[in-house]
Amino acid sequence: TTQEASSGVTHLSIIKNPMLLPNGSEAFDKKIRDAFGAICRIVGHPVPLEIERKYLVTAAVNVKDFVPTAEMVVITQFYLPHDGSEHLQRIRKRVHRDHTAYFLTEKIPVKHGVVIEKEKLITEDEYEQFFKKRDQKLFVIEKNRWCFIWQNQYFEYDEFLGDCSGLYELEIELTEEQQEVALPDFFTTAGIQEVTGNERYSNYFLARIPYRGPGAT
View 1 (tube, one colour):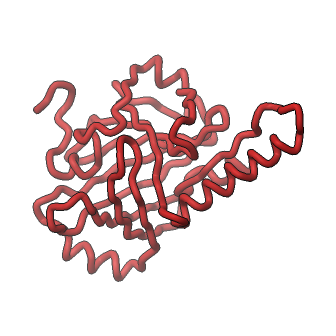
View 2 (cartoon, helix red, strand yellow):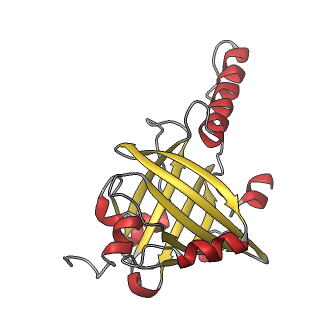
């Protein structure tokens, strides 16, 4: 399907069909408004907001056992030095199948679970130059990301490697702040806890203080 073929891309939004309203045109109009809003948030008009929910997963889950169409993306990322403000610059390398892409992302927290995000593609040479200029006080984050669709929702499941090995997180990017999330049952069975807005589970915090397991300080 089109959804399955798109799994693995960044910022995939699934616009659901609204419940049938007495006036069919109203339902169609709502879907158009939702789609337009999702596009505006991604391209930055008026501001590029990232609205997400994040969950800590107790144990590793083999997503392919439950969603055979899941796609894996190998991610390496690091941060550039900054002035101590909440304005962060992240450099990321994404390897999906035989394609590699490099990104410069700027993030500014707005409120719980919402950040302003500006992202642009960069070249491999630029990536290498940024790597030389990276914040040497921070660890490089490495993870395998499984992207999959479940009940018309696009999830990303991260298995952290290296210094953060043993940490597993599930994320979903939303089109609306109040949007309901139907979590996959194979994750709730494994054990899951929402950590949206919890600094300890942000990638930037993990680059400063790698995850050491439950209860670690």
